[in-house]
Amino acid sequence: MTAGSGDSQRAADRIRAFEQAGSAEELVVATRRLIACDDPLATVPHLVRVLGFNNPGAAVAAVDGLIALGPAAVGPLLANLDAHNYGARAWAVRALAGIGDTRGLDVLEDALATDVGPSVRRAAARGLGALRLETLPEEERELLRERCLGALESGRTDGEWVVRYAVAVGFEGLALPLLPAHPHSDRAEANLAHLLDPEREATLVVRLRAGVALKRLNAR
Image (cartoon, rainbow, N blue to C red; front, side):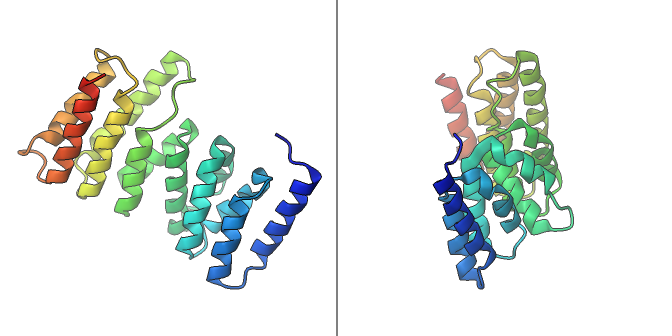
């Protein structure tokens, strides 16, 4: 839907207030007002900029807004990934994971494999299990799911339990839409069984989450 002139003017006013924010608190408020804008597409570049500021409150609000915008936010996020600004990249990973667009797959794979932050690796693992594959041709779905499974299998041995917990969530998310006899479902269940095994997974909460995932998959 195209924004009307009144919506565009209100968006311009909120963008101006964002640009003129003079404190961390004002920036958080201005970012939240951008999210509620009647012309949300006009705010995307500004929300992406927020990810690079040293303001976690504003970044959280910006991530929420970008996720709500969905696929329209993916291009600007990918175009502005900054390898030299760890904070901006970490927040962008969270946004891409929440959006679930397949264009973010490369970033999610790399984040789960290499990011130094457990919370970022956790977000990437969840995102790999929640990519929106349903509208793609079957062959492409199979290839992308194969990549997600491979990335999650590598993350299964992550040194942080919060990441392994998210990996269990990711395996469940990948397998739930599939028929029980699908090879990818079998592979996801085998990995969940690994995470359920106390001889191979020491953390109880991870084993419990893997067990929940297996029960849900068995109930399909």
